[in-house]
Image 1 (tube, helix red, strand yellow):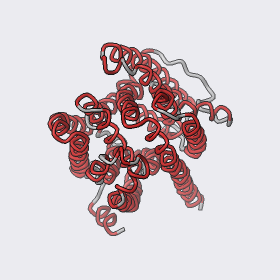
Image 2: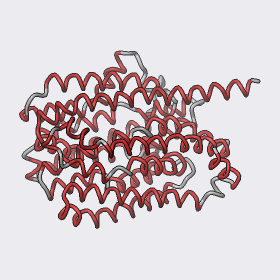
Image 3: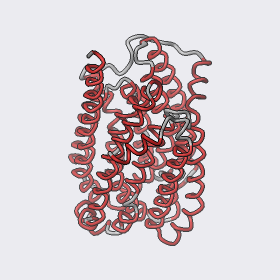
Image 4: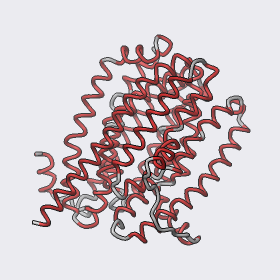
Length: 433
């Protein structure tokens, strides 16, 4: 009776966390759709393209600052959720390590912007976008995720996104406001810290732990594979916008940025479920691998058809959506949207083996090799495709990379299925559900 009651509570909490995140994701859909037309028309393709390029560069700094802790620290906290002292140790060790990496990121960014004339001429935009990595450091979403306090995250993010969106609509009026627009579109995470404090939400454990050098090195070593995998994915995510900005006009960057923004909204359908399932899967893979696979099958059977249907609708109505958001100045984004239509399905299908299975079962080195290989393929194809097809070439290169990544990740999990506890009977049951 007690076991059944606890099981029901776990299920309700998982669903509640997922629904809370979907509430925020709904705002993630709504606020960009409300704000984006104002930004696109006020800044024009050149101004919007400069922000896309700056945020692409800041994406590398965010990867360095996070260093894979968003997964490894969340997993460690989830497994240690019954041990407050261990939670404090993981939390403070992670925050100190991330703080050191944040300082290193700022130094590297300063050097890159100062020595690159194209970046130096827009230094204020890059400075404003640096709020991205400050917010990533200051708001410990991995801590909330590990403890499954995702409803609190949902509330905080909802308020911060609405606040920054409202400020953007009210204050951004012309191309001269590009720096302000860059600041406001990069600020939600940092605003979230203030919101959490005002709401009285604890963003740190009650007890303090001062980590020593050995603990920090151990934490970095544990997250190394995830960091390297994230760097590898940057070879075909941020790098496409970055290379496009170096080889083509700001208008081409704006077209690709708008197309990628629309496609990313569909990719976001899978994010709340993945975030909610990850800590539960961490616990289940450690204690009941069979139950972990049951959970994964259920998620995949609902998530993938949903995203596929949404992608199809976007493809059909792409001209109307792009026209409504940006007007005729951005009509070049339509073919790029249609080229990338498969990407949301591919990313969701890849996220299940990568983020939920491989991280929780010790296959991070294999994941690193896959992402590195895919990134190198993209780097080889990208310059040629961009030179000949501009924004559409960047979109083609990204789609090829996502297809290859999804295939290799799924194949690796299948290869190790016996060690991971996936039986033939579970495969048949999963296919039948």
